[in-house]
Structure formats: C-alpha cells, structure tokens
Length: 88
Image (cartoon, rainbow, N blue to C red):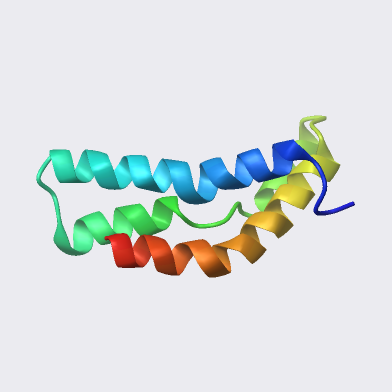
C-alpha cells in the first residue's frame, strides 16, 4: 500500500523534479550560477522531511499520506538528486 496512489507520485514529482527545475530555470534567467545556484537547486530537490508527518499529526492532517510521501521521496531522491546535480 505504500507505493499505491497517484497523489504520492504527484507530490514526489512536484517535490523532487518540477520545483528544482523551476528553480534552475529562474536562477539561469537571473544570471546566477556557481555554488550559489547549485546549493539552492539541490536544497530544493531534497526529499520531504520527517517533520511533515509530525506536523500532519499535530494539525489533524493526513498522517498516512504524509508519512508515505516522506518514504517515497526519500527512496526516489536516490535517483533524482544526482540528475539535478548534473543539471546544475
């Protein structure tokens, strides 16, 4: 059940691929490069933090969905982080 559900993959794609690509594009449009651009893009491409599930629990959110998202993004970041680093 951990790997099922379209919202998990939508959230993971948004967090690990789409947002970092937007950051890279904006930084290039602004003419920024080097270590600054690389660190910002890589920070954006990091998986969801474990605090996500804690905040979901505290504020009556969907704890199961948030904990699944943390696990999936952590696993998928093994593939996506090196790609983002290469792109930067």
